[in-house]
Amino acid sequence: MIVADSSTWIAFFAGASGKDVRILDHALADWQVVMAPAVLTELLSDSKLPTAIGRTLVEVPLLEIRPGYWERAGALRAKVLAKKRRARLGDVLIAQSCVDHGMSLVTRDHDFLAFAEDAGLELVAG
Image (cartoon, rainbow, N blue to C red; front, side, top):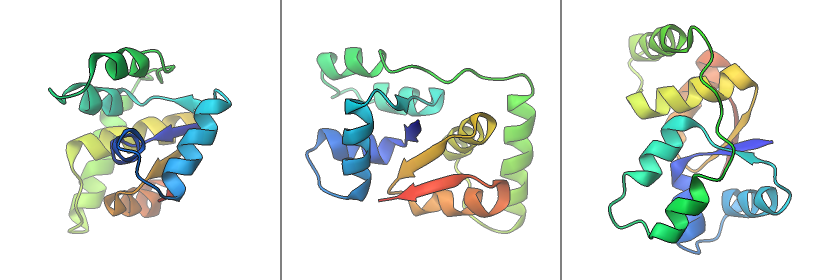
């Protein structure tokens, strides 16, 4: 099972190439993709997202938010920011969801490297 970041989903829907897109394509074919709540929110917030794609995205199984999630996410963000690294709120929430569930994150966004280093997030980079 994998989680794909918004950057990978966007590239996938745009027909882009890349390792991350191939991984997502294969995982979708094998029903091996789950959705982080923050990724779904980011994708659905695109006002130009076709309705059919939005309906498909909400059908991907959603990771549950576990007790203590918000506290762990806040502590993770504080840890990354203390090192003067970029820690956008959406990225922190995605990273924490993956860490909580032991899921690998497929992404093209290099900002997630900080979470790999500080929280043990397993990345599959595009």
